[in-house]
Image 1 (cartoon, one colour):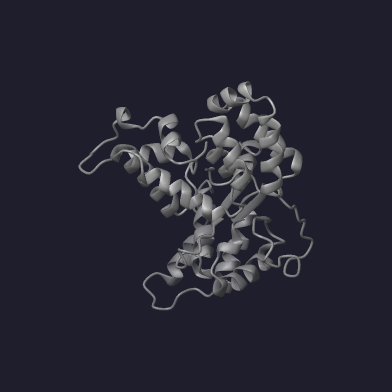
Image 2 (cartoon, rainbow, N blue to C red; image 1 turned 60 degrees about the vertical axis):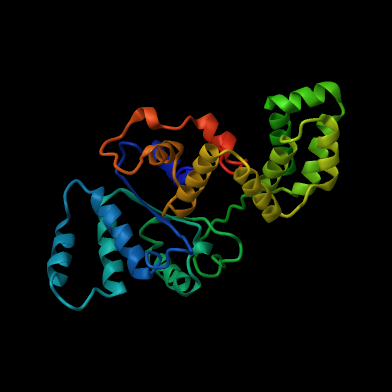
Length: 297
């Protein structure tokens, strides 16, 4: 689980105290209302206005013009206002995360908007490769994020060396460590998520024989592992099962990615609470242990 975006957090850190504005859009295919062109333009405008030292006169005039009127501003008018707002900052960054999750009927218009703004702001867009950005935006720098073999190898070694069960197993069978690393690395094919889920399944066994048998039959289908993780969650006691279900529900239904503190605070709130009770915060280690490997810090 991550925060809004590691890139957003990084830019915030290195530009702190500078004349910089940052706006963030997280696309979610389940929330088509906020992913409309109008919804995104309003969201970005609001974020920029909130970072101004005072409300710009152009914003006040824009509000007064349409206040109480049946007609709404056109997209061109909203884009013009955004361009004006960028003048109040030395630099303006707009992050669009998971563009491929934007409903297809809205994505084309959003790309048109980014094309209009690209000479006024610094754009950072994340997307699966099925969205053609190269043909829509000029002077685009593309960075492919793919786990290389060395990264997966290092991750698997670290997991084996830090997991108590795996340390016991590899002490009894020294060859097991590299057999696991080589086997999972081949099956994962550069997918960190698949390597992680496969490792979690191996760690659930109670003997060297069980690990070796599982290693030879592990599925290479991510969804099979999700089903297995949910099955393990359902077999837990009521308290642990309820905690895992609630945590996954918050993560899945949140309009943006949650950080761990936000998730823990959400889980601590119960019906009838009028204030936050710090003693009700779940322990991170317990939350992770009951989540079937689906939640990580």
